[in-house]
Image 1 (cartoon, rainbow, N blue to C red):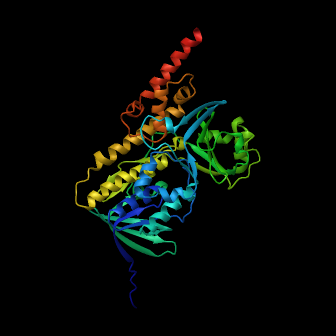
Image 2: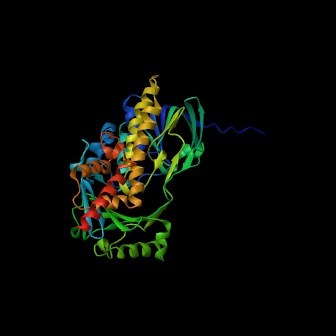
Image 3: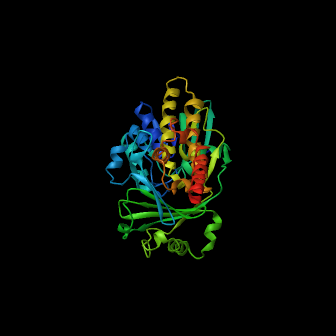
Amino acid sequence: MGWRFNIMNTEQVDVLIIGAGPAGTVAASIIHKAGYKVKIVEKMKFPRFVIGESLLPRCMEALEEAGFLEAVKAKGFQDKGGAKFVKNGKICDYSFDDQYTKGWTWTWQAPRADFDKTLADEVEKMGVPVSYETTVTAIDFDGSDSTTTVEYANGEKAQVKARFIVDGSGYGRVIPRLFKLDKPSNLEPRKAMFAHVTDEKRAMADEPNRITIIVHEFGVWIWVIPFSNGNTSIGFVGSPEFFEKFKGSNEEQFRAHIASQPYLSERFKDAELIFEPRILEAWSSTTEKFYGDGFVLTGNVTEFLDPVFSSGVTLATVSSQKAAKLVIKKLKGEDANWEEDYTKPMMQGVNTFRSYVMRWYDGTLDTIFFADNQDPLIKSMICSVLAGYVWDLDNPYVKDHDTALKKLANTITVRDMFKNKE
């Protein structure tokens, strides 16, 4: 009887990137342009659906450094110049032209399936191979060197030896799950129901170059994101209990939710659904550490908060932009201070967005957004956060994110009390 040996193909690269979303492709491009051999493995087949369709201006800096801007511009996605908040017919409009922090004043609203594939296609054109439908099944570290076992769609396995790994796997959370680094987020569990619909009555609403966020009821909100193709993304977000009030199929529930919101009911009555409404829930998660000997976590792998302020792509691209530069230093044999130059700034950004998410759900931001006679300077500072400039410590509403919003809301409340007594 003979012996059968299963000898796997082995590939050697400088950097293995896990995930071909914005986090993975930004890191891959920057590291590749520095002269290193990079490979991306991606579990899904592109194009694939994902939420996070309304970008923030801060991510444009990362996309520009990665060399992606022209390719994205060529797709003709919907320009986005601000955000609009609506509650009981009252409107609070933020224009990124008015932001406090100097930087980009516009970005895009785009179906993420098309946007992500544009970045992935562009990085392949640069010379970075992308292996789709490829699952990471094991990683063995030897210091900072690693051997990653992957499985292809046909069941074949292979090994990729790398000097460093960038995990941009998003919801897949490859390294945190393999090495048990996950820990629960401090945010309440929430659920989203969403779909793309035809928007033939778009002229009823304001201009399409901004996201609209509607306060549906306390703790429940709706996103409305118009695309340049004539379709619009609509999503309802709230506690799991909120979604129990309507029964039936996902489509029946979705249409009932739309009918119950006066701001949307006429515009989207009988609108055609591009796909069956989908559900996403219990998304908030974090990890014990953002880096280790031989790897760094970027994007949603570090922490995914909540879709209300569209922070996902910005945190993904900026974290990869920062991580890529440190990976390059590491490969050059230079000292890379991961704590000071990566973890500390990324936690600054994540914690700023976290404060705004928490103040959104407890009603603090309702008080601020829908106040009369808003201070233009303060509004511009908050606008900068909504534009993704959560690393500008010259902005008091970034530096003091954990206390500034509550203080402002209290001031508004006291002012209005005295005004009503007059």
